[in-house]
Image (tube, rainbow, N blue to C red; front, side, top):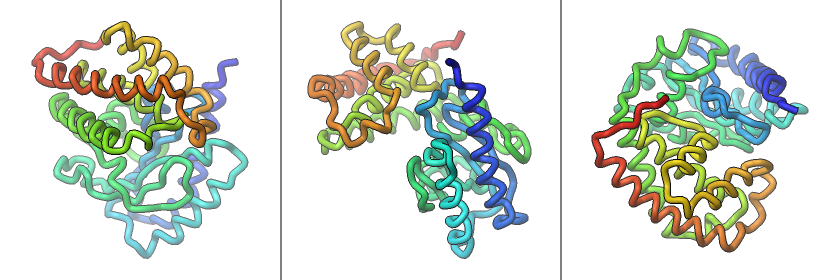
Length: 274
């Protein structure tokens, strides 16, 4: 059964419940609330996390973190699985238009966590691009009123840098990738990042997998298909080791992706999306 309309309504309700709790605490500092990520791009499924952005006028002061934290704990304990897969940040309005602010820590809650922390995780051009082009408005002005368009060249530069940095991290400690969630996640993430280099746009993991099957060497198709299949029930595999053959193949795939990324990044030809 296709649960997407039902799930979309449940996801919106969970984020609205969070918003109803935090908005009185933020008071006049509140600007808007949005879904981004897979629920905005349109390829979310029952195993996706729930990416949100709450826009504020000014960075959230430390004095408000404890009361906001209490709301996040209450929402996490709601009787719905979506409440335990919220991931998002409190984003100062001025920072959205300021590319110089990329990388500054935001007040953030990670997927599967109930603890607010300061993290730059969402403070990227990728998140800005998705929010502006596909963001779902729950409250406040439309995203296009808050953000400028992200130039394709700047987006591709950020993704190219991420590809290189993540590869260095993987090869510095390959065993960190040796679990049933991380290994297929790495394959799908590299597929979607390569697709961004090719198109100058941000895509979902399923879209990246479909692109990889068309654009990359056929030898990688089975690995990509297994990674996509593993997306179902991905959170149950975190404590399980990766398939040994796929673990080794993924390290080879990352090396291959590095070579492809250099070729794609150095070309002036950007694929025009259909």
